[in-house]
Image (cartoon, rainbow, N blue to C red; front, side):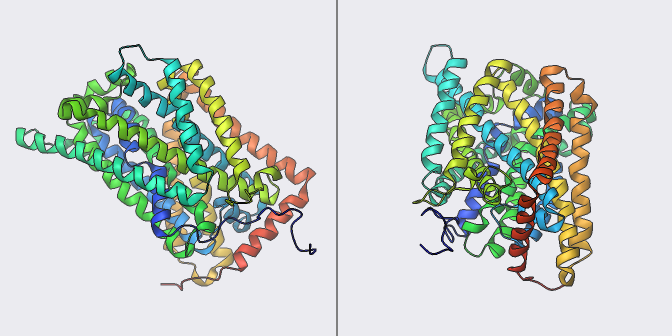
Length: 493
């Protein structure tokens, strides 16, 4: 064995060129869940905003696009599995990068955690159709376990299988949800009840408060776009493919969700959405039964498939960032180990599956099944908005410091500034006094957990800087190497 070889025979790099354009698209789109954005989030959005849910999704798209562009600009220059963790370690300093990496890990972990909770809810809905027996926590647990087993079987062999599975469930779910929305719109047009007041935010069911509360769950539909950047080291031509997929995924899916929300908003009275949600009933399923009768089961089945797609993509995103941090030493080195055959971070996947399952079981018992989804969904939006704000700042700093010859005042200055504002405004309106005043279970516990974990992540990074400074120096060196290996692709325009 030569002195330059690793101590064991395990690979040290992810499998290069494993996926192409379609694979990256499948991973990103599946993470955002085209069908799931409607199945899971339209109910909570409409419960507070009423029939203006299309306007809520459209505003969420406008708030997300600046951050998506910042991710695209910087991922074009630094393709890395570490995503914002690697970028910010060089753009600003390894302290900020490591802190950001911890927040990114948290974001993907919560995204993973939400999926078995949601699968269990749809699983109960499916059982209720066929079995007379009462469904509840026990049957929900079966759904939680079943979804985790299926996703693990797809995730462990490698990212190629993950993306193929994601593509299949994405196309199926998208076709069904578009078909249902199109059916409602066609019937409404024939009846003469087609209207466009749904796009007027002023018509929100509970005013501005209801609109911004609904905005939390509309934004939840968008938070997965950044997972696309974590596949950079396994993608053909990542500097070309990844940036395009990030932006187009957000734009196209945002418009699709707006269209679907418009159609479905016409199917039920404004107050009915809140009533069904309060009873733990998915309003979209009610709409499907009214318009498709027996065919409504297709909605439940594709919802289950859509959850599996998001579950799979979330696990991939978490494992890649955890691998990058474990490889650098900012997280335990065991997370930076790859499977000798499949070249995927199995240890990181072990951790996320086991811990997510344990937390889902506890929260389902503590808060109830549907409220558990709302609790973790709100937390996910918080961490996504914080991450987006920091990435936007890092985009400006990076191009000003290291790509001055291609720095453009609009693309790398104004747009990231808008992205910072569009990320911070939801944090105030959605996680401010209103959420705190919602009580312990529905509000205060979310606020304390979210801000507390940001503080703990900061303290962890401080401890790392104090007691293991060589780790942060290594992070800075590695990030510098990645940057130096990637010359600018464009010139100022």
